Amino acid sequence: MTMPPLTAAQVSAPEIAERHRRVREKMEQAGLTAYVSFDPDNVYYLTNFANFVHERPFVLILTMTETFFVVPVLEVPHVLRHKVGDLTLLDYAEFPAVVGKRWSDRFSDALPTQGTVGIEGACPAYLQAQIGNPIKLLNIIDEIREVKSAHEISRIAWTSDVMTKALAMMLGQVKPGVMVAHAIGDVTSYFYQRCLTESPQYNVMSSHAAGLIQPPAFTDDPHNFSCLTATCEPGGPFLGLVAGKINGYGAEIERTFFLNSIPEDTKRPFDTMMEMRLKAYDMLKPGAIGSEIDAACQAIAHAAGYETPLHRTGHSFGVTSHEAPFLALGEDNVIQPGMIFSIEPGIYLNGKGGYRHSDTVLVTETGYEVLTKYPDRKEDLIVG
Image (cartoon, rainbow, N blue to C red; front, side, top):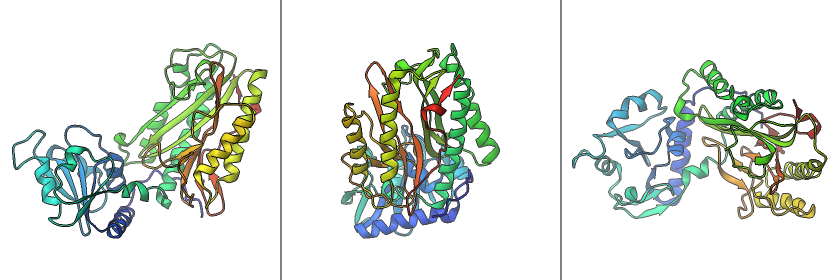
């Protein structure tokens, strides 16, 4: 696999058409006459239109020959501005609306009168109730999203580049006495600057990313982001994280770092985390099993005397910042070229601190390529 160049360019119509073709191929294999998608991430993947769920539903219906998109009439200009590829728009008046002009009326217009209809797990009960055909629950779109195309890899690599540079900016602001909110203050404007200068079709609704610094008192709780008013004091372990999605595609980068010096009692858990990390990289290649990678990382933690880690070894990225497949106990997925994972095994010591690096990593034919290239040795992660 040749690494495609970084790009923030909009998806092409042929790329969208190929995604539709793959969905229809799986529909045919499953014996479906139609497939219904409600998840905004899947809608974005197949249309380039980003929406959020509210009382006015957006529903995508694929038959074997046509793609219908049920949308509120007030959103039609919005859809036409951003959509890529062929769509038949079926617009409804409003929510609520009178009989004959409701979303459910347009939905019924698109469904075939016979055959089995596939629905994804995210379809709400009120939508399922409108389907008179036999139903089969299948997450077809989620499945085809697991292996990325060259375009998607380029987009995720671009997001990774933005986030890596943002992390360097944040860590450069960490000094004794600096408030966390001040250290991360320039990150959002940097995201916008990169999008506006490098992606003329940038859609703000397809970006949800942030940067964070966690001081030592918070790092044992990996998802505690409530420390904005805390000040940075010498020592560690600190954690710097940039994550989410920018211009439609997700990535993340995270580093455990230290301010001015490395406390002696932090060296052993840091080194154990690094041993887990190196094991994950050593095993990450086509044909490997996701659960086995996680098990090997956990075994290292246990051998060092640490309890079972709080967090799985990794997850994938795409049009979201967290999606399948996973590197986790309980998921025996076979890793394939073109998959992208976070590599983020960690050690969390209650009341003492947490230790975790995370990178966004592409699986190649022979191994992997790290998309978020940044120093990871503790000696290179002393700031201030």
